[in-house]
Length: 156
Image 1 (cartoon, rainbow, N blue to C red):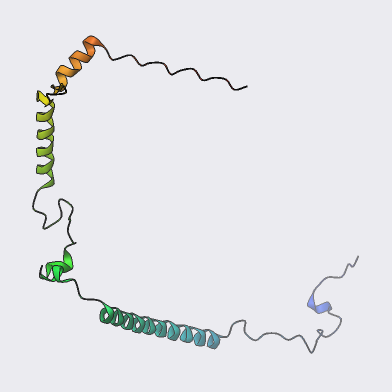
Image 2: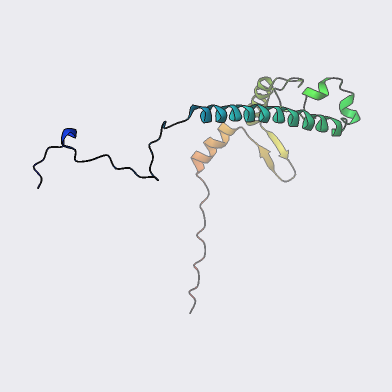
């Protein structure tokens, strides 16, 4: 083990030199980074210009190749561009009735049909009675019994 200190004063000779090893004067050259950023900026601008050009060309091609609407839709005037063809869903603009009103009317018709009594087919004896009366009859007489299915034969 050496007892010598590592002071430069006790250095025993010149610093070693090697022809293939050299000290770099700077780690990063700023000129290279600036050139790279300029090329990157130019590439971004050129790609934007190319995208706009492609968009305009394809839009023009699509507009030129678009077929005119059928005569039925042309009769609608300018609405044929905004309105869907018939049949339209309820509630969309241009539809004649209100869906809430239609629902109320349907519920009223259904409730009137549930409370109606009368003959459906008098010759065969089929009649219609109100739902409440039918439930009372079903509760008092009970539901018809379900017959048990026949037992399956075992295969040998």
